[in-house]
Image 1 (spheres, rainbow, N blue to C red):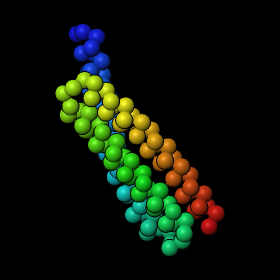
Image 2: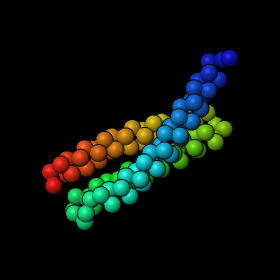
Image 3: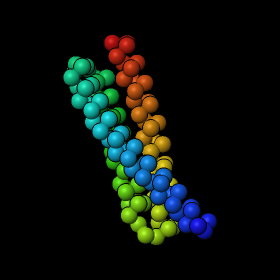
Length: 111
């Protein structure tokens, strides 16, 4: 196996993992929005938390799409570009997930 084909194989593996994980995170965000709506009343904090989760869901959806198109493309350069986009969006999504979780936990303990 040549070095280039080995790198391409690793890239495909990364895209598959990002695709699966970010798709699952879209579901997690949607589930938490629903649970948050049921548990917490109509407080301003509730609305901010839901807005943060909605933005997070869109980021994970964009990550899923970038990883999907990275898997579908036949051009190696485009694959690398889409992989970097998916990596970056996934890390941004995870960061926002962490911030949203901290915000919701703080809001629920303070109120």
